[in-house]
Length: 252
Image 1 (cartoon, rainbow, N blue to C red):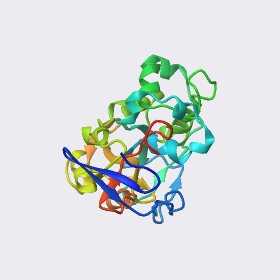
Image 2 (spheres, rainbow, N blue to C red; image 1 turned 120 degrees about the vertical axis):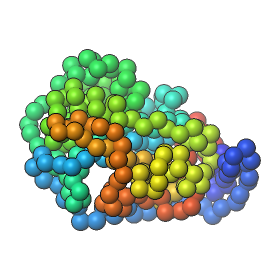
Image 3 (cartoon, rainbow, N blue to C red; image 1 turned 90 degrees about the vertical axis):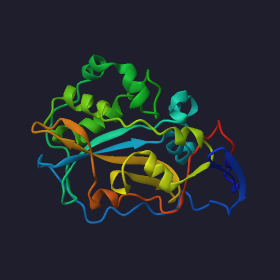
């Protein structure tokens, strides 16, 4: 386990080592990774998808003062498994389309595909599931990204669910500790061009992004190597990556 006061336990296989490190006070003040000169527009043409998954313990730590319901009452699976952030159309030149039509989000699609699947794998931790605002996350993802996919809402959300990449056991095993970045990249399969690890303050795992191909109508077809534009979004710049616990459930 690791504590926010700079005392960390390092997970290395079956061995756990105690290491004293300086205070990680720069965690929330470090600048985000640069996205270069990428731009967005409303032209629905795109070449592939970026599939982004979030690590909720780190999101909750970064927003712990906001008292989000899902952070106070997390699904136990989220401790060791990332959840879906979104399936985002992307172009080879680094630009991307957004908000390509005014088609309104249809909440019945979520029920048709299985609301429980979304609550577990694509949650909105800001609100309780009973809140009328819970769907806002899916509304945003459809409005900004899904409308550019060329797919129906059912096919878009189903493509996202089916693109989910299982979280390596390494993440669950290292809860509250840290892992070598190279091992985490390898655990996600393929070489370093197959995944972009996004970290808060360059060290705390926040998101994992992979690239997904598409067929002629826009349906996701499976993982492909990422181009340089996506790989530049990787921001875990240290050799080891810290795996956070939920703010009120782990060692602080």
